Image 1 (cartoon, rainbow, N blue to C red):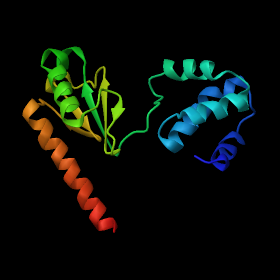
Image 2: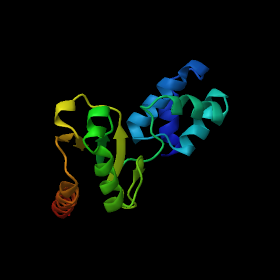
Image 3: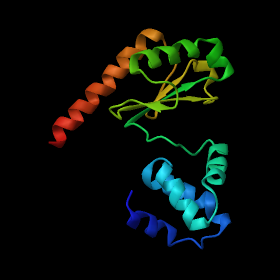
Image 4: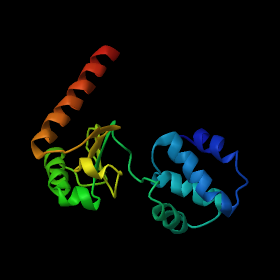
Length: 161
């Protein structure tokens, strides 16, 4: 993010404390997450502390503080999914990706997240892999899904060259 990016975004606001949430939303929409640099710049613009900004942003689950990978994996941890083994599914993703929940792989290909409920309890455990729902998920399918998306990424990279 360049200074010009911040100037463009900030120019649409009055620099009042009430601009904080809309500013955070706009920055996240443009860049996918709220960086430390963004928090520092917002602090200077609104003349409020970085701690106050982080406190507000971390209260709302919509704001992310890490750059998301190309593919987002959401494991439902709602009651029905949990009872049907979603924690084991999450553990398998963690082992294969070498990340914890709410982290992104070093190659920026995958971000692993947990969600409280996706409202598809009868199909649990549910995994949402970049918008595609996978119901009645099994541990043995985790590696297959990861390979499928790695392969998809490689094909997209080859055609982009």
